[in-house]
Amino acid sequence: MQKAVLCYGDSNTYGYNPSDGLRYPRDVRWTGRLQMLLGDGYRVIEEGCNGRTSVFEDPIEGWKCGLDYLKPCLNSHKPVDLVILMLGSNDLKDVFHASAEDIANGVAQLVKTIQEFTKEKQEKAAEILLVSPAEVAEGITESPFAMSFQWDAVERSRQFPELFRKVAETYGCRFLNAAEYATASKEDSLHFTAEAHIALAEALAGEIRKMEQE
Image (cartoon, rainbow, N blue to C red; front, side, top):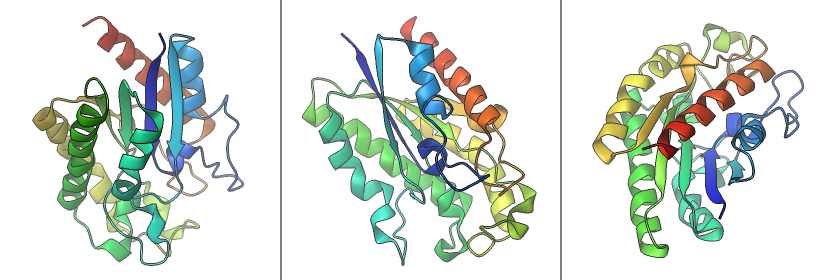
């Protein structure tokens, strides 16, 4: 039986292409490449949404709160064996005035929701691979997204790995630091290059293979 892997994230899970604002093809974005690497024994489900936050309500696009859509998403795809959760970058937007700790706490709410809801709605709780997003690059204040992100988003994003790792330890999740494998593009200081998608997919596939052996 195939194992269902739900990839729940923002534009870097969706596959936003920083060079033209469109979407990378499936065989380029990390979700599609992960499917190729894992093979037929897995079903990789893409649930990336541009602008998605963890728990914050966008004052203009209120439907992008990750917590609000999480339960319907999990219920639609059940049974889910593994959730790869990579959110937090959009929480750095100036409009939310959120510290790195605030953002980590929001992500912790998502982790708790995944564990409790899947335990209730399917035979067993889904495993979670919590991914700390790649760093926002220093050119963000000169990028096309400068209206949303201030210079301090860079430093706050650099605090994510330590804080997200603590969340993973608290809730018994697996953890991966995307910044070790993927960097934001020079075009917009926020979104992955094609090469970054490849590297992240390979790292995630390796982590999932480790989980298989335990």
